[in-house]
Amino acid sequence: MDDPAAHPFSPGARTFAVAYEAEDRSWRNPWFRGRGSLQIDLIGSEITLQGRRRGWWRRDRDLVLRTVDILNVRCRGRVVQFWAFTGGSGKKSQLCLFSLETEDEAQLVAQLLPAAVDADYDDEESFGEAFHRLPAAGRPWTSPTVVITAINIAVFLVLATFFGTGWISSNLTPYMRLGASNAAATTDGEWWRLLTSQFLHYGLLHLVLNLWALLNIGLVLERLLGRLPFLIVYLGSGLGGGWASLAWNGDRVWSAGASGAVFGLYGALLGAMLRARGAVPRRVFSPVVSSTLWFVGYNVAFGLANRGIDNAAHVGGLLSGVILGWLVMRPLDLDVRRRQAARVLALGLAAVGLMVVAGVMAAPRFDYHVREEMAWAEVRSTFFTAQRTKLEERETRRVKTARTPASMMDYALWLKGGLAPFYAEWASRLASLSYEPGFRTEKKRAAAEAYVRELQAAALEMSAAILENTVERFKAAEQAERAAMEKFARVAP
Image (cartoon, one colour):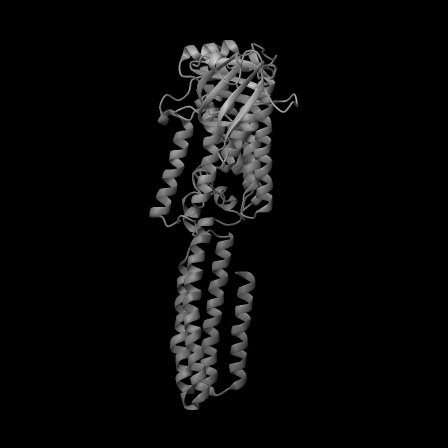
């Protein structure tokens, strides 16, 4: 600390060396970085902060504040903080804080600064102190946010490494098999997909964005609500988003990701603030509500402008979170929270239970089983690949026959002994498949079997027409083949 009489700026000034950032980065001064100095002019009623301003240019610069524009001074250890008005607008700009070299210096600076306190500040301080008294996770693995984050990362790594989903997610099939949610699959007795889908992500970017949003709010909200209520809100909001996606998207979308649950956390924060509105200071309540609404509004607008984003899950998760957050929010007083703990857990679980019952009853149903459809898609793909090869061979033989009339007999014998048996074999394979009667997949199988038998009959008929040298019969067989293909394309696409 300098001798005030020796300071060149003012004979009544006191100058202190200050640091504008915590060593652990837990706080920082909004205007300056690194180290600098604080000059308090005891005569001119102003203070001057000197140091390197924040920004890419990093210029050394002074910030002069009038003492009449400073209020809410607090000293915590070596850190002094206050709020300051700037620009003469009468609007509080932001918090200013710095640390001194010793606690004694910090106490002295706090005494030299104005003692003015605005009407809301004491309430804010009391709320902040009560919030920080709330129990937080003692170790990382007792934090639901950390555990959920770790599970999401582990699931992503396992799927990308061993199940072929890839880092950019170009292959949807593993997600369909392992837990993504789709109305037809989920309502077909696989309700667990509503839970597992919350831990699957379509690529690294999808994962990073969701976990970034989760970490931004999770650690704060789990302390505000309590760890078990937080888990109820997170999983319940994910379920709410899943139900909304089923109702809105039907079987058109395979939904996956933590975004419904994360939206639910922001909704829960809003619901908790509304529930505790009378006990939350205005300057705490307003920014929280404003930032939540901005987050929700931006992401919903972004989802509307970009195909492939499941906005239904976002909105469903948000609304579920608002309700659950309102239900499980408790006063910050520790004794009251302990007394209400059992009731709050019961309310949260009851709300989630009602959501599950209502969702099961209202969810749409479909006339097919997804696993049968997936199995049928593989059979169909195998058949058409093999048929394409056979038809290419037929075309080659047809061209050869057109050039060499003597090869007509070989072509007829191939139709009878090569193409017709191919269709006969596939007809038998299709007949041996077993799907649930009356459902869509069984109807497709039956149509495919009939189609293949018609193609077999057409091949035999063309062979016979060639052997008998009957042009009209050959043309009729070709027409029957085309009709069978057109019919199959209509009834079993």
